Length: 187
Image (cartoon, rainbow, N blue to C red):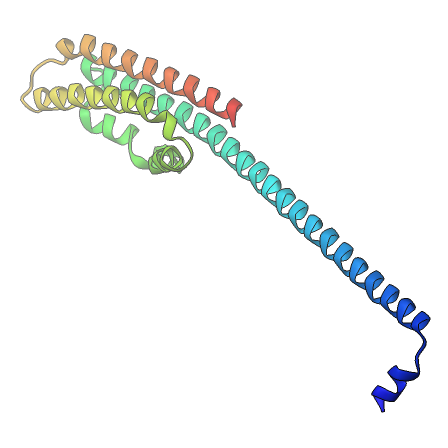
């Protein structure tokens, strides 16, 4: 039956049919090209939006880190001032410990500093290491003073090393904050 229909059809109808088929193929190809281009453009747009979102998050974390480092420096200075009172003999060591207990930290989380640096601020590593070295120097002076205090020796000899260690810590914190602000501006 189909063969009879084809045999009876004129050549003009075959030309028309082939035109319709060719037009349909061209339309299908055009739609495919358009969809492909739109998919690529959407992927690029999504990648761009993800990059912007990632940059925004990094910048926010670095800004948070800057504030945390400021609080950290203030806490160390507060502890230094209280320990200085012990060195001068104005308060005893137990009162110093009461004044600098963890409840006075106001919920400050030191591990958050390290976490933000590890995740968002690999370039901050060297400046952070200098802060940690300065903190260790403070801890060494404090430990030596505590040992001398337990033995009943005067704390005057520790005032200068404690002040120098605190100054070095403050300078290291300032340098870390400078590096953090540069990284935040570049994010």
